[in-house]
Length: 156
Image (cartoon, one colour):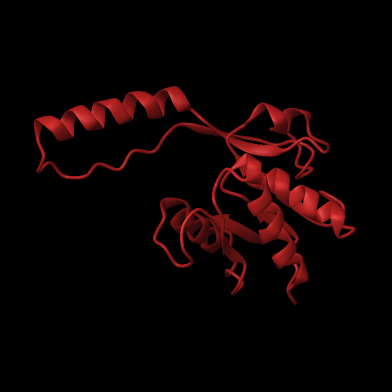
């Protein structure tokens, strides 16, 4: 499995930590070189990173992208190198953008409650203004995995 993260290699981004935690929970070990940096909303970065993954000695059978645009770029790269999504490589993104619902194959995604994120951001900012030394709070947004054709996983 490969993944893209939004920061420099090795950066302690929440998504990167979650990626490693999920792999460990599934009894898997990250493959060196399979966590590649990419700007989160550029299809071209998803394409480039996927091409790099496909050219390596340990081609992944699944790619988790930290955004749907990255995943759409990764699907195009798979097509361009002669791979079939999801038969040869499964692809999933985050964001549930409209384009993913109409891509071919349709894109599996993690839909995040953006309204919740906005409300929490305002609440946290207001709290920080009122108490600048308050402890940092970790908030987990409600989210739903939406399986579609790009992972060929039946909906539950």
